[in-house]
Every structure is written in C-alpha cells, then in structure tokens.
Length: 192
Image 1 (cartoon, rainbow, N blue to C red):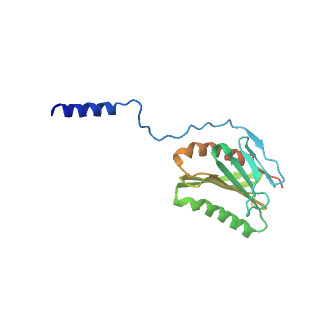
Image 2: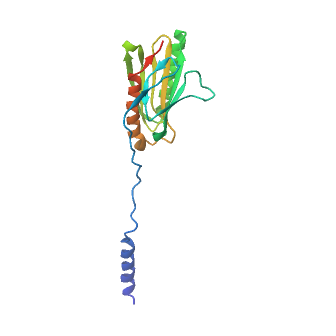
Image 3: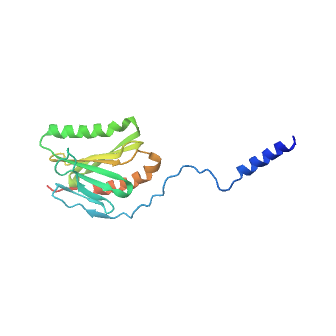
C-alpha cells in the first residue's frame, strides 16, 4: 500500500494538468475596425471652416464655460473628442496670452508623457499658422494644436479619449485620428 500512494498521487496530478478545457490566455485587446477615410465640409456661422471625417459628429460646445464658435468633434466609434475653442484677437497682448496658454496646456501632460513633439504649421497662402503638439505616452490628451492668422483669429484643438489612457490599446486609434487632424488642418480656412 505504501508504494501505490505516490503512484496514485502522481497519476492524479498528471490527469489534472492535462485538462484540455482550461488554458490560460494572455490579456488581449479588442480588434479595431477602422472606417474608410471620407470627409465632409464643416458649414456654420463660425469665422472658420474645414473638412472633418464622416464618421465623426460636430456639435456646439454646451458646457457652462463655452463661448461662441466653440465646438466638439466626437468620434463615437473610438470614444474620443476633439475640443475646438475659438477666440477673436483684439490686441497683441491677448494673442501672446493665448499662445502661452496653449503651450502650458500641452506641457501640462509632461508628468505622464514620454515625449512631446512640436510641429510648426505654416500655410501662408491661407494665412494659417500654428503649432501641433504630439503628446506620447499614457496621457489624457494625445494631440493638441492651435491655428491663427496672427492678426484677428485664434483656434485651439485638443484631442481626448473618454477612458483611462492605455497607450498599448489606443496607439493605433491615435495614429488613425492624427491623419484626420492633419486633413482638418490642411483644409482649414478663415472666413474673414
């Protein structure tokens, strides 16, 4: 009897480990289906216009602090939102304050960011100038920018996701949406 107990235990252990019904799986993310890139023109009474994706929704900002010509461009499929803020410029001091505020708001993410890249926007034929901030890492905002004619108009955009940032899962979406932001900037025009 003493010799059969270890053999019985070893056999029981071998059978338990060979159960085909349980196999641990690594954590995975859902597959993301990206829509085709198609754009439509933003038409409103605002002093600016641009093209935006057909799979996004544009609506006026309705928060308590919103001002005229502020909009939200939502991407429901990706649970993301581009906040668009417009400011008329009346003095050079206002312009300088707005530019510094945009820089501060972008660099506010340095606590979690692995890098922030500044790209210059220079479209003199349209009088569109600005800076595009690419923010890398597990940050609340993946991209921010401002556009101006350096004279009368100033617009700021900030892309946010409505969930906790996990760069591994949202990086393909960020790259996809950055192309939409590029298209928006390339087609951007001041009306006045």
